[in-house]
Amino acid sequence: MFSEISESPEVFSRLIDSEKQFERAAEEIESKTIANVIILARGTSANAGHYLKFLIEVKLGLPVGLASPSSVSIYGAKPNFKDTLVIALSQSGRSPDLLSFASASREGGALLITMTNVSDSPLARAGDIHIDLSAGPEVAVAATKSYSAELLASLLLIDAWMGKRGKNRSHLGDASRKCLSSLSDVDSFASTLDAKREIVVIGRGYAYANAKELALKIQETSYIPVQGMSSADYQHGPIATLSKDCQVIVLSPSGMPKGALEDSIIRIRQSQPEIIWLGSSQLAIEDERTILGSSLDSEEESTIIDAALIQYLTLGFAVKNGFNPDSPTGLSKVTLTK
Image 1 (cartoon, rainbow, N blue to C red):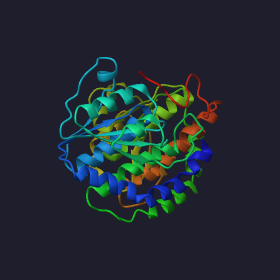
Image 2: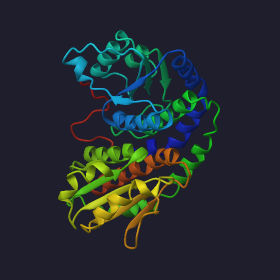
Image 3: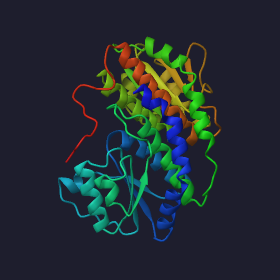
């Protein structure tokens, strides 16, 4: 897992150098009338899908939904996807329910773009356009570099779609290397995070994807229940369970507007939990620990870089708890849901 996290800068460079595949995807989109977008994914890829969803809604103003694959694979739905773009994200490209939905979406009139890390997978072959994540073989069960690749590929696709072809994102490789060279704060925090106390992870906007992903990664490698939520949704009920004994990890990437989290943090502090900031310290107060991540001005870029922090934190926490994060109990690298 550590080795694969460390490959992120090289993965980013390969993706950025593969701009032609994003240009082809944008040209195909532009040749159609697209009124809405559906994102098709499961697990870690579904978390990356939340990042892509937010990008499209903010940058392009289009409505975006998340697919329910079982509506087709179990219930036999026949979706009408006229003027719809379906974007399917998957590391392996082999899950039967994703394949069923992808096939039904094309039959229903959708334009289908697939993003996978296996270029000859069934899902890759099913798309009108395939985007290769270029992450290389991923052996650890807990996906790391392929998740980071999905985030960056999402950003590069939207760049191309918006006509910003050739936009320089080459600095992201160096930003990733810088982030990975200073992980001592992550090690320190992983050693003090307590598996016996409740853990809540919150984020908002672009960082919502990383909040869900950090919660998922802790659950699958350290076997404890963790909530990963939007800071806004957290106020609509779950905050009632908050106590002094709780550990709240707040994802606040550099570039995020202060107003995105201010109201939530005021309410959270009233219960006096331990608060840990990951990303930036712009809203932290004395006695609240901060793990600094990317210092880039762009929130969407910082979210991509900070993904390595949540992955490394998961790794350190699992090892501290005596578990092997490369081979979580009851899980396999490819999950074949129907």
